[in-house]
Amino acid sequence: MLNYGSITQYLFDKNPIKYFTQTTPTTYSSHYYTQPATTRYSITWKSTSIGEYEIYNLNRTISLETGETKNIPLFSGIVSFKREYVWDARGETNYYSYSSWETEKEKNVQVIYEILNEGRTWSHGTVYVYKEGILIGADSIEWTPKGREGKVTVGMAPDIEVKKSHTTKKVAEQYKYDHTVTLWLKNYKQEKATVKVMDEFSSSAMNLKATEAYTEKPGNLMEWELNIEPGQEKTVTYTYYTT
Image (cartoon, rainbow, N blue to C red; front, side, top):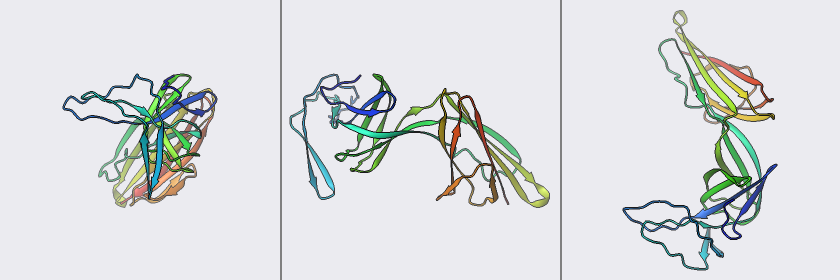
């Protein structure tokens, strides 16, 4: 458990998750490096709204050696969140192949926490996520006003396996290419997992058909919400042709 005095922020799942956001004052040097702070700080931030901006002033000075970085916790509190598994399968397809071909690629499923800001504005900074006292991930968070959700990617889900295969077949007599894309997932967890799957199709795709209903979004994006029972597999196949 990382503790800077009383500066600790909590999320709650089945087990407590602790995180904080931080700012990083630095000095500039040709020997610049980053080192986690080990000093406990007794600090108070005073925030002031100026137009569209929120200004944070520290109640004390911080001393820095040349090339030194200190992490100063900025917020503490309790927030609401939900965990999401996301597989982004985009960027793995050659839409314009001029011969028959087949490819298969393994990818990773991201673990993302959507956290709701129910208090003061969150500044841009780094979020560290702890579960049962163990650091499970860190990510940057954008400027997040009250009432808005922020997303924190804490790592990958190794117990959800995914693969994407794409087969293209040239149909010479019809001057077209038939495409078959298969998205395969397996859940090795002891509990049901809901995975958001995203993929994109070519703007020249015609007669697009999928074995599972999807939501189409701007940018030729397809999105599925797939529920996979423990130890089970799920396969989604979609087909189309190009000329």
